Length: 149
Image (cartoon, rainbow, N blue to C red):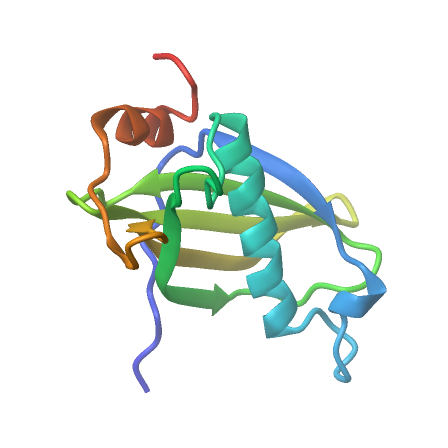
């Protein structure tokens, strides 16, 4: 069986902590795959806000749309865990890029890798319902994780 392999970048310009909520836990007693995807979405929104962007600018209609997602689960997570989620942007094209994520948890003084993920993002004009170009300024902010270089 072929396995998903995500080539993570060497560095991540942004990370945040996300606590595991009881609603993130499934009938198996661990964090469900749907919760991991939701957590990726939260971290992506936080990263974009940190560099002065929103996923959707309601004034101009410009934003991003997810074109694909891949998640490789590496370990179990449980209610009470606190995730450290790192994110970086890469694989840029004229119309989009990928976000890369690494989710870890500190448990019993050990760092456990919970998941690695990638989301493909396209620049999207929601007013015209079509893809749009990735600006040089946006690419620079996404690469560095900073508003100014």
